[in-house]
Structures are given as C-alpha cells and as structure tokens.
Figure 1 (cartoon, one colour):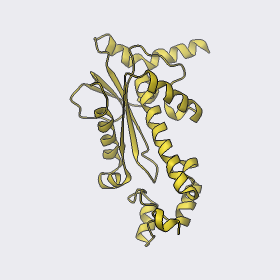
Figure 2: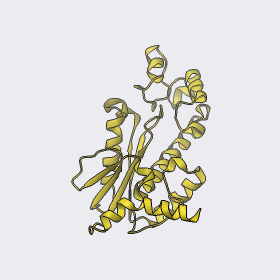
Figure 3: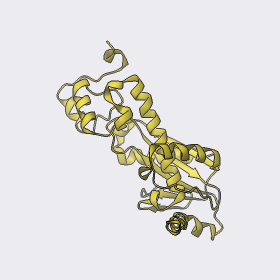
Length: 222
C-alpha cells in the first residue's frame, strides 16, 4: 500500500517536474466545477503550489469525502503561493453556454492570482493565454496543481450552495448541490425555479415554456 501511495505522488507531480527541469517553477493548476447543476454558478480555481509540494491524499476532488476536501481546502489556503477563484453566474451561463462560461471562469481565476504564472496546467479545457499552457485530460487526477484547484473550486461552490440552502431549504441544495437528482427535480416541479436557475437547462426551460413562475425571496416566502 505504501509503495502504491508513493507511486501516486510521483505520478501527480509528473507534469510539474517536467517543467521544473526546464527551469519553470511558478506553475498554476486550473480546474472548474459546476457544469452539470441546474442552479448557481460555475466556479473555477487557479492554484500555484510551492516547488515539489506534497500533500498526502490530495487528488481529484470528486474522489475525496467532504471532510477531506474541507481539510485540504484549509491547508492549501495556508500553503499555496497564490490562489485565484473565478465565478460565472447562471445568467451568463444562459447567455454564452456552459462551455464558454467554464472558460470565462478559468480566465477570471487566473487573472486573480497575485503572481503571474510561468506555465498553466489545465484540466482538459484549452485556453488562449499569454503564457504557455498544457491541457491535460483528467488532469485533476494526474497533476497535483490541478487537483489542488479542483478542491478549492469544489469547496467554494459547495459553500455557495449551503448559503442558498439557508435561504431556500425546501429545495435541498445542501444535499444535492444543485445537480438534477430525483429529489431536486421533484422540489423544482413543486416550488418552481428560482432566479439563479439556469433557464436554458432542461427541465428548467420546460417549466418556463409551460408558464411556470420564477421565484425570488419575496414571493417564495409569502
């Protein structure tokens, strides 16, 4: 088991070490979360880690428990050289589509870094940047920098969903985070969409077409 963990750590630093060997040390990992939910923003993070940084167990946020993600989130905020977060709301997602909105979130996250990276490692998405970049399929499971970004983005978005849950507990956002689970779809049918739903997403668009009312804090609490 120990050898397997060591191998995983070496694999997760493979892309970073190739860049280190070429004299590049300020490497930003970039990832986004929130393409699939029916409500809320898509969130991206850019993270620059110290050279040869190690954090045992850090990997793709989808493979981690919420407790682990929260722990790593705090550690990364303390250890990282710089962190930038980009948030693109549902209105813009509806205007430009989720693919373009995800790119906008990534650009925003990179622009919010305190230090300009020398190279950017991106999870799958090709970006047009002024600095060199590498797009890696399933990068959040292959690059420590991208894994760190996935954790920052995931925890940031989840906490936004918790805030929404406090305002509208009947939708169950704390449980499903806005993804189209059976419970969520039932609640959406019962209570109707909120203003920050993605109206181009089905079944939200179907409800609007059928004349469903868009809720806000005033009319839902009547």
